Amino acid sequence: MGELDHQALQDALGEDADDTLTLLVAMASATDENLRRLVRALAPRLILDRCRTGMPRRRGVGRPRNVPAHVGGELDIDASMDAIATAAGEGRPPALDELTARDWGRPELALCLVVDRSGSMSGARLATAAVTAAACLVRAPREHAVIAFARYADVLAPLQGGQDPGRIVEDVLALRGHGMTSVSAALEEAGRQLAGSRATRRVTVLLSDCRSTDEVDALPAARALDELLILAPADDADEARRIARESGARVGEVVGVDDVPALLDRLLDPR
Image (cartoon, rainbow, N blue to C red):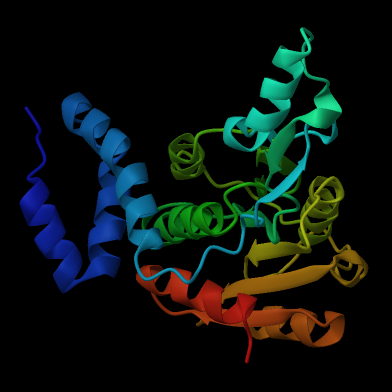
């Protein structure tokens, strides 16, 4: 019966994170049912925790402020005590506009990850997709979306769906490849997802080599986005660099699975 040695796994991550994460993803499809179940339960949490390590100050959460309760937010009992006491002394319930609420305001960052699932989805490529999803989720905890695409775009997690991050990473790990590639359709769906965002920055993260096979030019859709970051494989980044150059996007080249969080941070905060 299959089992996992957690200490050995941590040691392996310290020695070679790329190979270990890739192997862990492959084990999620193991024939041993018990091992497969253990890996599928562990992998999303491990990947999310790893993506939090060394993360800059969280951009995705807005700063809290006090507002009248009728505006919205969560009731601040401490700040409302005087109004509650006054109303009680007058023998009436307090009015909403007398109470104080805590509102987090607009989030600073919304991220929509767009994952290219055309072709083969296994090994390092699937691990890279899962790590990229986790990195996006922890950097934009309030507003994030995940889209997978081949010929058509499938929304795995809508922008304000409120899904558990571990479940989203698990869904990415379950992706299987398809044939055709429509970058344009995927970017158009990203634009639709981000259109409902309240965030100060609305950023699309495209994980792809950007080689469309549907003969539809992706540039109009790329240019229509507020902000586009492209993560392309280092050994096949020519088309991604071209689209970035002609659309005003920023592009980073993925060398290894474990490099993605730091690469995403550099693209989000270019200096």
